[in-house]
Length: 387
Image (cartoon, rainbow, N blue to C red; front, top):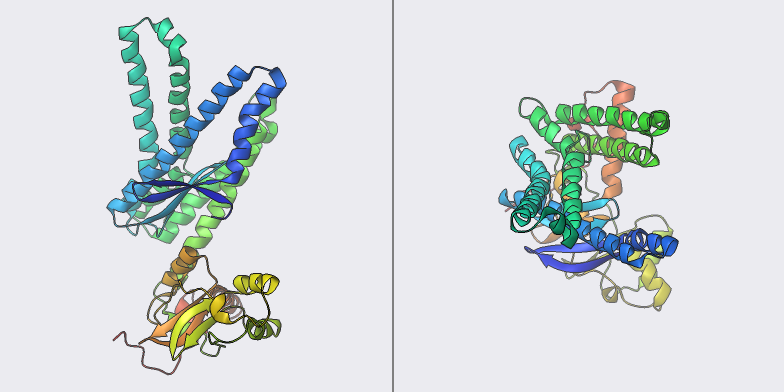
């Protein structure tokens, strides 16, 4: 994720913290110090906030390690002001697996809460309870409360919280995955409406809070995005790249000047270019890299100096769903389609979007069945066996 700082690796998983987290950290601690002049209390608040960050990372590691058990790799974990995000390379395919992965995060919080509270009770047997609170027990009790709150909040049956995925997994055990996602999303949006009304009018009964309005928006958007993503993947499931890839496109050579690529972009023909040398794809030139090169280099700079040599490629018999996962992994906009070491096509995010848009428009105007096989496709006249 952009604007993130690496904190190192835990269990082989890269941990990042977004720079906005430090802004919240400074506000959380410095606001009280500046307002009251009580810097000792501000230091305690900062320490508590730091402990919260560690707890969130452990929560996300719970998801990541559970996913690893099912052969699913975690790309990274990023700490954000709103919590943590573990980017899995894919979601578990079986409902029971998703159920376990979703429960793993809150389970970490429950274990931490029990362990911390048990430690506090054990210290009470060794020393006086009041003395144990005096030497740090109150801080530990705060950590216990934080873990309980995180576990309860994350188990709310609403996307993007873990509880939404738990609800979907339970429903999918005896029903269709898309249907289960739709039901779970609607439940979450009903909760979002409840949060919104409580935040707007709850002040009359002492429960109103602007934070509830933000949570309502967060839950509503998360539910809608999850439902849209699952519906899209259902449409694209099993559709091969060969049916959507562009077969008429412009390829560049490593010795071409970046000005030549800029000319193709200006004419609106193409934004991302495969770079081919002696019949082999040796790189990809993305529009973003081209613009950066034009801003800081001579227009006669050869493509080889700015192209990406570490790039993803895809086979024409791979599915469009696989392409979407590759796009997320490489954070790129286009992938070269390679068959028997030769470039046979180009698949882009825009092309997939156009496919979905045309499919929906045709279904609305002609009443075509809701299946990808009825949508317009492009099939190149070539033998696409994987051999």
